[in-house]
Length: 363
Image (cartoon, rainbow, N blue to C red; front, side):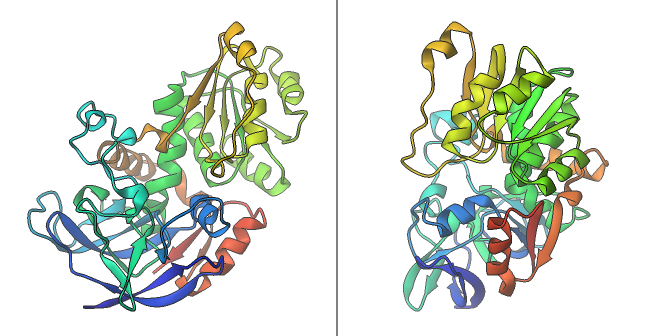
């Protein structure tokens, strides 16, 4: 069987670039040559030991490329199609999928890093290897489920397409699908990383005002202003007071895009009565968040969990692609670094340093 160069995680936070065996696509599967893979905070959570994954893991879940071959029974794709991968493929048959709520599918094998038949397409020196979230996009080629590869226009650049597959869909979806924010409503975004900037893009698209952004670094706050933040503040324990200096009653909607228990805990205090707090960032496993439930109930506030921005990939990826191509969603400006696969560890070090924007691996 052929091999593919890939970034392999085996418990060591430093990834190894190794040759991984990749089988041909089976029934309902497609082979994709990767054009670009994002370097996302969810990957870093694995490398830093916050989340447990089966090992060895082929990292990457935010990818785009070109279909090279299709397995038996594939009808929606053919060789030559440009696609974005979704890291949470729907099973299509569970109650949630039948209701059109694919983001809470109960039959997907993605989180176990398995294809629908319970297998993985990769192996390493005779040992089963697990593509992260059933994608493993930090690899020259991948085999994924048909429903995990969404066709998009060929003119969409691979680096932009890769980000649509996770951070953009998550951030814009949190605004449009979860908060259902109306024009003129006030908003707070905590964290101006890749997902945070995506939320800001969604807020600007929806007509939110004011858009307050909190972060710990000046560089990230500067980038937030470039994408539509009307006010920026440093993120610390005094954040609720800082927000109320701008909007005395508190904001209509607050979004947390980091996944820190301490910042999630203070979100309700930034809200006006009847406001909503949307948890978008994913915290480490087994890290509970203390919430004043009495104050939440008495003031009629809502606390919402946002999984993948309640995205339906088959519907939303082409829509987001079109918004970019029409000049309404400046995704390309979010990309501040483009690197090769061999520079993947430098990319994660850059993320840990708090550098602004997003890094994309180009193949």
